[in-house]
Amino acid sequence: MVAFVFNTKMSEQPRQNIVRAFFANLGPGLITGAADDDPSGVATYTVAGAQLGTAMLWTAFVTWPFMGCVQFMCARIGMVTGEGLAGALRKKFPIWMLVIASIALLIANTINIGADLSGMADAGEMLTGINSHLYVVIFGVAIAVATIMFRYHQIANILKWLALTLFAYVITAFLVGPDWREVAHATFVPSWPKGHDGWATLVAIFGTTISPYLFYWQSSQEVEEDKAKGRRMLRQRQGATGKEIINRKLDVGTGTFFSNFVMYFIILTAALTLHKNGNTNIETSKQAAEALLPLAGKGAYLLYTAGLIGVGFLAIPTLSGSAAYAFAETFHWKQGLDQKLKHARAFYGVVILSTLIGIGLDFAHVNPVKALFWTAVVNGVLAPFLMVGILMVASDKKIMQGQPSSMLSRVVVGITTVAMFGAAVGLFVF
Image (cartoon, rainbow, N blue to C red):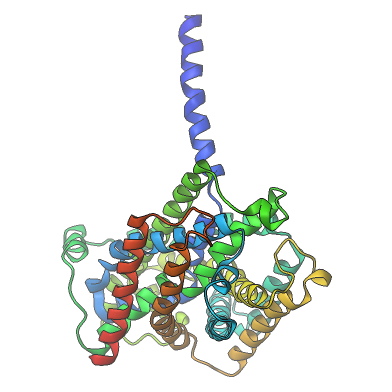
């Protein structure tokens, strides 16, 4: 009997260690994947479901391997070069190209921040009745102050827990009560986009799923992870062990799967409620949530609304932070979420500037869902150009410290780049 109990405990221990190790290794990849389902993503996927029904469900499966390979390539660049993406690109391209890319990223991210804050504020107003303009200021200031005051490991832990708010959209889809046979057919029998709106939606889905700010954020977080381990000098951060690379593959794979899993259920919810009942012209996130109330019940309405606030707190620091990293690495500013404000004024200045302009956009009465959707379209057009640069860096043995990306990875990212170029061409042709 004693031997049986002893053996049972011994068999349970390794199982617990495996589970603990799995969650312990989740970090930059999970955060980046979850941040992809920001209010911009929620709006884009809601528009896709409302306008086209279940016709775009298949994209969730197609974009997962594409997104996963691109994000892991960016992670690998950060891990083996010891620098963020802009720092690595600087070794391959002239600085004027990086300046243009950084400015474009800042503009797109700032519009995204403004639209995200508006979506969060509308959600706050629906839940409490307090004017949304007040919430825009409160949320914007709170996120900027937290980004500046907290250090990297604190921010990373907070963002990991905020990722749980995305399950609100999965639960919402089940509350609607879909016909799973019809859903399965739409999922596994792809239908091509029809007309300009269909192609614009496809480009927007690509643009919000495989987005430039995620490239910069992923690679810079690898640098932050190394700094947190005491590798302050560049030479200490260069190179990565086989175990570190495998762990990050698991992390990125989990994060990107989670992102696309949630994306699938957002499209499904909108298709089975808004599209099915003729509500195809969604102008605001508030309108989308209010339309759910009579169609799917109060539970779905509350989950959709509360989810917007949670994902906004998760995504906005990555938007402002990725632009700050891009400028800092381009101009060799002191940088990092491990730095205090007085030691990295220019870096945090970009965070503050983008947040303040984002707050201002709400008071300028910019339509948040249209801004989010077309920002995703712009990202869908610009991202493949940046991915060409990422491919060139990831294939350079000298820059990559003798650890370039594998041929399989380069082929998949190459296919992704061509697919995104093709979708963009389809948008303008059709």
